Image 1 (cartoon, rainbow, N blue to C red):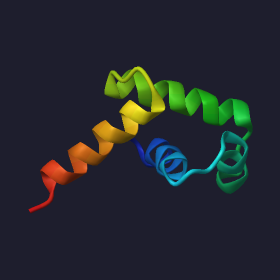
Image 2 (spheres, helix red, strand yellow):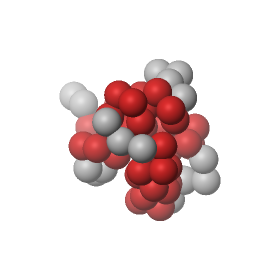
Image 3 (cartoon, one colour):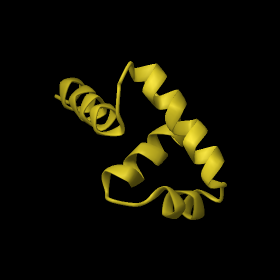
Length: 65
């Protein structure tokens, strides 16, 4: 499970926001958002943001009953 800040960054990107928009929404710099996304990719063992989003969505689907 990802920490809330990492989930939030990924969620905004999945909704079509740019890195700059995510940074503004989160009150962070673009560099901080990029580091956040690097942690997401490593945590999920994903090669891309799209794959990370897919893995996160699959995880949510598998845990809801």
